[in-house]
Length: 160
Image (cartoon, helix red, strand yellow):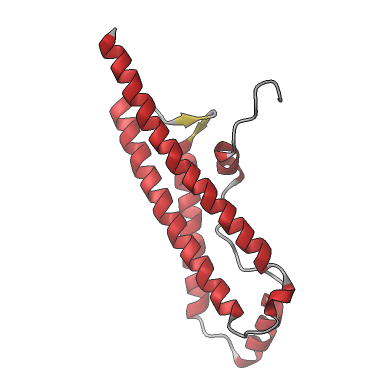
């Protein structure tokens, strides 16, 4: 009985550590969403002409940070699943599969953005692109709705 209690306590501690990292991902998502809300305000373009470049650099930093966090989480969840012989399920969601899909989407978004910037725009297109890019925010590094639901705080009992 004592051995089983120790095993379950160890399992619980390792799960809590993973969920703390999931919480860090949630906080990063909130920062990204806040940044994108601010970046969608057209008034931001008044003043410095380097604002769009700075925004794109910030998106790249967010994308890299998110990818590192997700890769770390995936490695830890994979290790956890191997150690415990079961899938890591949180609120009914198999986290590894969802995180892997979100990481793939984030990496693909980064590849598309880099591929777009590697192709130099035609002179007549650059004016049009600049004027339209102010109205349409660049792709963000937003999380899929499934992860957002899994990462959301639990509803208090009896609230639905």
